[in-house]
Image 1 (cartoon, rainbow, N blue to C red):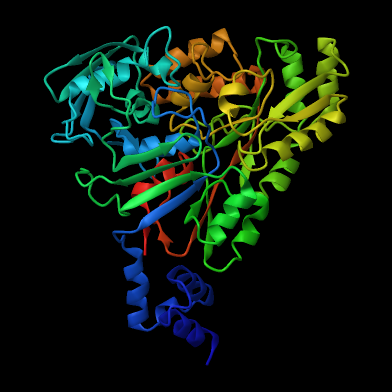
Image 2 (spheres, rainbow, N blue to C red):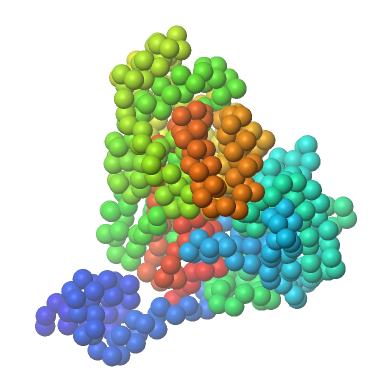
Length: 529
């Protein structure tokens, strides 16, 4: 029996998975030669199947997590929110915007006024029909001086929201915004049932799954919504999300069958995990990027020469190879990835230059700079290891970086936006305006470096309402250059999303890279066999 015959025999007997059968047959160049029955079996397994209980292991979670989408929170609850809630729009696996709770949307003459028509007959999990009042109440709570919402700047760009009957909402904006519908796909802007003068925060949504149990920072369980309005999704009967911050524990849970999918696989061990029987490892090119934000409202980071010295003091190439094993690309101290429409490919790539870093420190009068850099193991795989590498690199520029390891629990509430210098990461955003507005505008609650640049903010406003593509591109290119040379973040890497899953787990041909976990839609898009 030759190699291919043996492969076919083992597949027919169930000793080789469909995925491995296709992979190995393709490698042999003999897939088309497989018996018709086996080809049918392989193809049939590709079609989504209903049923089963899916278990997902996530890195991020905190005891401060809540069911309120307006609060600052972790990847754990972002996945949960996208699973149990619906938004007006959603970004598909190709990065294109589609209506979701909305049936349609269009500008009313110019992009400072938008009309959204709601999909008829959609119900919340409690049986209430989603209407225009729910939309208005859900978005209004992100506005106001006391709002802590990540989308406050977007919500406050709305001058007024008017219900034109139960299924139509008219948004009048303070200024034109050609990307406004994209922003409404954010998990923070989930639509919840209106209740009294606010919304119901008990976890009732209009998503593909119904929340059944929620333990902040620990786990959540959901079951399929029998009245979900989108065909071809929500395949599994139920699912659980577990927070497992420790990489070894998460990997062991996958290998032993305690979970079916693990996110945030460490790049340095991904190839070893892929060799384990019954496990597949895949990565997806994404807009995810790693950052070290410096608080520019505090010394010494209020000095632009200090910021530049630190940007020059990290060897990005070595970090890419040692931390990501090449599963990503170099960052250039701005957050716009090559996947974005207006990425500036003409900006020179910043390189490691200890001597130039020394020059900038001398300009600042801060030779022998000593700073502390805080990170957490649960932030992203390799976060604390990167701080150690950064300290080695910076030493050659006469900079003493003291890495400090913070607890995983409470990192986003106790360290991020609090510590003078810390590690962070962003999943990226589908548009330049969204990314810059949320992470770098002077008014944003999530401006993690407290950076303010008048020219940048002027361009941000102008580009948002500009319909001429060439002019808009020029503005975003200039903004990337300003951010690269002045902002308070070292943005050193773009990282692929790396997932590992068991052989009974299957997914659509295209996996989204706009967020982790297939755009945080993994529970409604993937299935079990």
